[in-house]
Image (cartoon, rainbow over the protein chains, first blue to last red):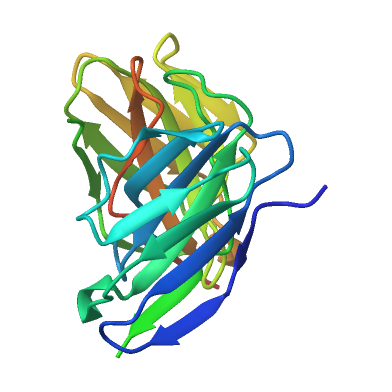
Length: 116
Length: 112
């Protein structure tokens, strides 16, 4: 079946602009995660959804970052007033069900964000 | 929170040799330890995982070992092949969490 998809694959924007990154999880997966991956680093947790609600947003670096998942499927990561330091690959992952201590992550291909 | 350290950052081997990547974790409550492989320009994919109730798990040329007392776990790849070349990430997840903490990754290069 179809895997996790993300759009756009690449996004170039100017400092101070607003961007939206979209994630389509695997159908039926209730858990959805956003990560940020900088060059030479592992995925850094941003936010986790269980269904429609943000169960844990402790990884969001500041209030310029926000994410929604209004119908429990597609999610959008929103970044306001972008800064050059926001440049990274933003990965989305979904998981079939939220089991504490046993969540295989199915990753999307990522969105490469470049802030000029 | 959990802290995961991964070593080495780069590992270069000849085809047919074995490769070992090691990770340590800080939270003794962690009980799930997956390993992901990320080929250049592609998404991370799970290759093997282990839960804290076992000490070793094998899948063909890949094995993972876990030492709960020392809080470290390792990935072992035998008979390496050029297609094993990729970045490998370890992760740890605690029993009360739904969120894995990833290591910084190991770039494995297998020379033909």
